[in-house]
Structure formats: C-alpha cells, structure tokens
Length: 249
Length: 391
Image (cartoon, rainbow over all chains, first blue to last red; front, side, top):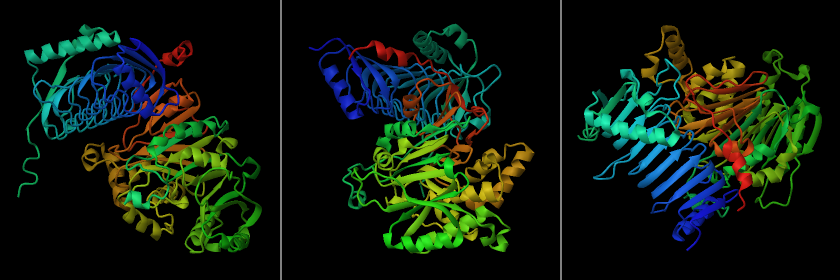
C-alpha cells in the first residue's frame, strides 16, 4: 500500500504520464492526491473508478474528468473546455469558471462550477435509470445552454450577474429532448430554443433545487437562503423526439 | 489518408490548431520568450505540420521600410526575385533570415528578408501615390508568377517566422526568443484538408496584417472568388489566406472599423437581426447585402493583427475556442486558458468572448472586457502554494 495522501508536481509532465501516475496512486490506495503546477494537462481523472479526492492546483486542461467514475475532483482555479465530458460518476467542484461544453455528454455524477461557463454547457447530457447527471452553475452561461440535452438536471444560479442584469444566453435548450433546467431569474421567450418550454415549479422541483443549492452553498461558502429567495424558471422539452419526423419521408 | 500524407512520423489522427497572442497596449517591447512558452504549452493541439510566429515592432532600425519575408521553394529563383525587387523598390538591406541548422526540420526552404523603401516616382499614376496599394500589387505579382518564391510577409516593422514543425522547433529554428516586439501572435497547426508545407503554415501576412486561424472556412471558394475580383490572389493553398486579404480589403481599403468588419465576417443570424433596433438592423442588413461574399462560414477562431491592434474573433456561434485575459497592460488571446496562466499566473480578468464579437487590444488604450462577456476574477492563491510543497 502507498501513502494515503500524495502530492504530485505536474509541472512539465505530459498528460499521459500524469494520468498514469494518478492511476498508480489510486491503485496503491491513495485517499487524497494533490496535483500542483497543473497547466493544461488533459483528461485528468479519466479511467479512475473509485472514490478518491483529487485537488488540482492550477488550470487543468480540456476534458477534465472525462469518463471518470467515482472520484471527487476539486479545482482550485478555472477549468477549460469539455469539463465532465461523458463522466459517469463522482464529482467535479470548480472554484472558478469553466469553458465551453461543460458536462458534454455527461452520464452521471455532479459538476459544480462556482462562477460562469461558456457555450453549449450540458450539450447532450443524458440519463438512464438511476444515472442522473447534475450540473450546477453559480454564475451565468453563454449561448446554446443545454443544447440537445437528453437527460439530467442543469441549474444556473446567475450569482455573477449585477443587480438588474439578466442572463444573455440565447438558443437555450435548442434540440432538448430530455431532462430539466432550472434557471434563477427570468428569460425572454426569444432566448429559448424551439424545443423547450417554461412550466411552473412544483413541490418536487423545489425539493430537488433546495438540495442542490445547499450543496453549492456548502462548496463555495454561500448563503443558500439568499440564493433560493429569487424566482426560478423551469424549462422542459416540449417533445421527447423533436427530430423524429425530420428524416421521415 | 492523413497517415499516407504525413511524412513526419507523427501518428496523431485528430486535434485542432492552437492560437496564442500577447499584446502590450502601452507599446512596451518584450522578448519572444512568453509567446514561445504559451504556444508550446498547447503543442498538443497541433501535430507538427506547421507552426509560426508574428511580431510587431521587431525591426526598429528599419521601421520605415517594408520588411518582405520571402520563401524560395525554388532556390534558383532568388536572382530573379532580387531583380524584381530592385526594379520596383529601393533596397535598403537584404539578408538571409537567421536560423539554426541544429534542429531536425526536414527540407527547410531558403528564406530571406528584404527591407524595401519606395521611390514615389515608381508608383504607377493610377495608384495615386498609394504605397500600400503598390505593395499589394507587387506581392500578388510575384506570388502568382510561378517562379517558386513567395512573399509571405510585407509589413513595416513586422516579422513573420513560420514553417513545418512543432512550435518549439520553429521557435528554436528561427531563434524567436531573441526578437522583441510589443505584439506577438503564434500558431500550432493541425492541417485538416490542405497540405502541410512551409508556405501554408500560419501566420499569413500581407502588408502589416497577419492572421492565425483555427477552424475551417467552408466559404473559401466564395471568399476567394470575391477577393480575386478585388485584386487578391490566393497562392498558399490554405483557407486562412482569405482572412488576411479580407481584413486588408475591409479595414484598410474600405476603412471599416473593426466592429463592422467583425459583423461582415461573422454576421448575426437573421433571427437576431430581426430583433435589433431599426438603425442597427439597417446596418446589419446592408452589410449582409454588400459584403455577403465575405461572410466567413464554418467554424473559426482567428487572431488578426496589424501595427497597433490585435483582434480576436470567433465565428458567430463560437464553434472554436477562444479565451481572453488581461493583466495590467497585457492582453492575452488563446485557444486555452492554461498557457496564459503559465506566462502570467496573476490575471485581472479572464473571459470567454461571445461568438462574432471581436476582442480588440489597441496601442495606447486600456483593455476593457467587452459587454456581454462573462467575467471572472480568480484569486491566484494556488500559485504560492506550490513553493511550500516538496515533491
């Protein structure tokens, strides 16, 4: 058995070698691994299949936690594009912002981003039976939020918006055909894709949201009560097969 | 196919180009060290079939001359080229571009640079004494002559260094770290559907315009035909070339501001135009009618630069990445955030630019994150933590 806690200097290390070191550390029984000097190494956390705490000090590269299944990754910095790509289980907690396509094709687990995210967040996120991926964005998101979303839960809190400022994302939920979005604040109809609609919040929605906001608030030291005091917009797909007739002749 | 055409022993089958740009808006010149560090950090994005650097302010001792960088794919054409240059310009200095023979780049072409002044008497009357029009004409004339020589940079106080190799190799080959400038751009290439040859590496340049690009211009044919009607001829076998000529046409010849040029290249979607206030809508509709052939279709991110200005732009639905950041007087544009952090751990701002909206750094103007960009201030605490850990 190796050490339960481990520190790795990732400075100048190629991602293949870094991920090999991580796999070895996890195989040797590590419970917590701290990665220092991370500058753009890709796929960190991929091919790990049990719970272990990984702290990233720096800026992890694209496709952080892709295909990951079990670990909890805490990023002390910003994440780049494709964070949580096809992730299967575990958690990613980013103390900063994240780039485009966060939660891309995600299949399970949770992603918490403290601040803003880029384009196409949760694109083609999906769910199956007990696998229900969850993304909570503390700030606001850019265009094509939830594009082709097929399942899971996407929460956008808008905490980085200044007083009176609204979400500016357009084409929200374009092609969405599964799952649910909760967006704190109001949206204009033109901001929504053709395939989604606003529906009233029900008790089950409030309960789900309360739990997720509590988790967000605990991760980033915020007041859950304050966050929940504003109205949320609930978005669901209008059809489960929006393109079912597209290629039917 | 990719493996058949790849003679450089590289087994990568997919990725994307990498872009990096740094501008000091106060005009302070700095060495190429940071640009090399930044683009080398993204070497993974390219595959060794092209890399290059552009630098502004690098030839202060010849600041009034046009710095022609000429690539000889046929070394025998050099006397002919020099005769051509002597005939049309006043040559103030000529030299082979310094390089090191130690690296393993296969078959580098001969590359020379010529510092040229213009004798106004040699400019044909119909050009009305316009030096830059004269330069464009002469560049096109030589590049389409078929003699095996290409002028791939022709700006004042502007250098372009590029070739087939990884960014670190090209940087070493040309000794990039020994140059100084106030604005740098760099590229790591992953060629998609055009050959990886020295002339096809980025940046592309004409006058003091340079462009580095990630993406594919699916409107290349339309753009190229339109530009040919305006006197621009594409000779580099790569789609990016049209961006350099389009920038020259729109911003120099037609005097359009950067923001309007961005609206031509990456116009809002029609459903967005319909929601605009009437004056903006009129402008957007007019631009689409007048310059429809310069709409750049397909996914792209570009960094366009000229003396005093660095412009980052993505296609209107942002199908390629671009991160912008600011630290004091330095503006950074990059395909990824990590290389920015590597050269400047502490940043004032980091943001993801909105598709179709340009990020512009201008000499003498402070850096303002654009409206609608998402901003985030990050505490650089982790940068210090590293010191205390023995690994």
